[in-house]
Structure formats: C-alpha cells, structure tokens
Length: 390
Ligand code: PMP
Image (cartoon, rainbow, N blue to C red):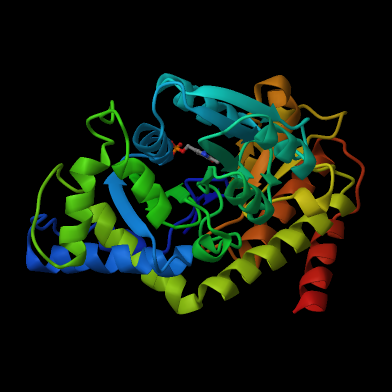
C-alpha cells in the first residue's frame, strides 16, 4: 500500500490481518454461545502461551497498567513489605502502584543499562520478610531483559510471592511460569500478544490465589477485585454465561485469533524467531557504529532495541527522516536520558523484511544527516547473521 507506514515502536505493533479482521466482525452479545466459546478458548490458550497449565487466567478490559494494578490490589495489604527490582521506567511505575495500596516498598534500581545483581536481591530478601517482589521482564524504556528464573527461585527460598511484569515479554521471550514457579505473570494485548490495545491479561499461580483468598482486609479496588472477576473467568471456561462488567467482545475475538496464530507457530519457535531477529538486528546496529543502551548484548531484550543516537546527530531530525521513509520508531522514555536514544520494537509477527526496512531507512537517514557509513553495511551484516544462524 503506497504511503503506508511501518509501525516499529515497542507497542502497539503491526497486527496480523486476521486479527484485525476478527476485530471487525459484528459484535455479538457477551453471553451469546459463540462468544462464550471464544472467551473460554482464549483462557485455555493463555495457559499454553504462559506455560502455566495450573494457572488461573484473567482477561479484563484495560491496559497493562491495570494488570499491574490488579496484581497489587489483590495481593498486597497495608504495611506489606514489597521488593521492587527495577531496570527502568516501568519498575518505578510498579513501585508507585504498590505504594497506593499501602505497601512498604524497597526499590532496587539498576544503573542505566544494567540489571540488579542476584547477590543484591538475596541480601535484601534476607534483611526482612518480604510479602512479594516484582520483576520487569523487559523494561520497555531501556530494552533491558532480566532473567526471571533465578529471581523466582530466590523468592521461593524466602517465601515471597513473585510478580513478573511481562507486558513487553509474554509471547516474545522465554517464559515457563509453572516450572519457574512465578506467582503472577501479567501482560497487555498490544505487544507480543499481537492484539490492539485494550486488554489486561494476567495469570495467577495456585499460591497467589491462596494468598488472595487468605487476605485479612477487602481488596480496596472495586474494578480490579478478583472476587468480581474469578467467577466470570470460571464461568466462561465452563462455557456458561455470566456477567460482571461487559467484556471487550471484539478485542477478545481478536485475542482468540492471535493466540491461535501464536500456538500454531509454536511458542518455542516464536521465541526463537524473536531471538534470531533481535541478534541480527543488534549486529547490524553495531556495524553502523551505533551503541545500544544495555551494557552488554546478554542484557538486551529480544522484543525491542534501545539505541543511542550518534553524538553528532539530532534525534528529532533522525526520527523525522525515518517517518519520511515510512518507518515509525519510538523516542526515548527514561526521563534522565530521554533525548539521547531511540527504540525499535521487534515483536509479534515481526519479520526479517520489517527489520530490513528499518535498517534501510536508518542507514539513509544517518547518511543524509552526516553520520559516516557505507550504505548497505548494516543490511549486509543483518543478512549474513541471519544466514549464519539459520
Ligand atoms: N510494563 C511494561 C514493561 C510496559 O512496556 C508497559 C507499556 N509500555 C506497561 C507496563 C504499561 O502498559 P500499558 O501502557 O498497556 O498500561
């Protein structure tokens, strides 16, 4: 399509035509048999994607922030100690949410481009009894990937609930919720799940549900309260009609379509595609003499890349040149260094072709703005890396 722009920000992403088509079908009643089936299927498919056969899924209209809010509202009570492990903007957001519910939070913040060490986390967990800890799997502001597995193990060792913000990771990075014993894994529809914005998705472990059931005080948030939503999720899974708040019918039809696409590709294969493309993209970026924000490639996410603008180039001009070339990328998000870097999303149905388009446009923009490089250099490295690894 002439003039069509390629949306390469880290969410919302480019969506599959079948998902968009599913969104546009005539809206049915939320208690119509066809919709009950779609909702029930979506809940079941979530367990496959999250690798959580024992988990309790929730699908609620809202954004990723609602999923974070829901975890905090249902699991935290006044004066509970909560450890927030932060590698960017979204760690701080979790801290703010938890404080709203009266938690005593301790935030462990990694220096920009790094992750908090396991030693630091364990030292803190030893110092007092924490009810819960939060991890941002991929912080979308920094492109930092945290390995949740050893942190979940520490949480278990110190009898702490583990909550994973997987908004920028679920269906794009490796997640084994049950095997890793993560208590909450939450996300939103608009990223690697591949559905337009508007759904908060959350999977709770049996332990998390027990902690919620044993609360001493009522959940101080009406909309987020699992007492309202659990019967609804159970009913849809048992293919019975029910009502609490009108579900986002069209979005859930789209969700079922996308989850089927994800499961058809196979979650492991899908994650591998994200890894291969991310690796090749990072290699290409390095060949253009650009530096990524994560201090090492081992800490770099597979769902997006955060890249510093070259020192001699005005970031706003670079973004404008990219838009002229019909490629939309995102600016920085971390307040301290916002103007110094850009972000490229590569998740969901992203393909090598999409990233070739980004690299081609980026090379031209850099050259036009006076950054010395040989045209085709990044593209060549990208191609070679993909050919070598596949
Ligand atoms: N956590 C992370 C890691 C995110 O990337 C985002 C959104 N960019 C959120 C939470 C919040 O999600 P939403 O914007 O859907 O509320």
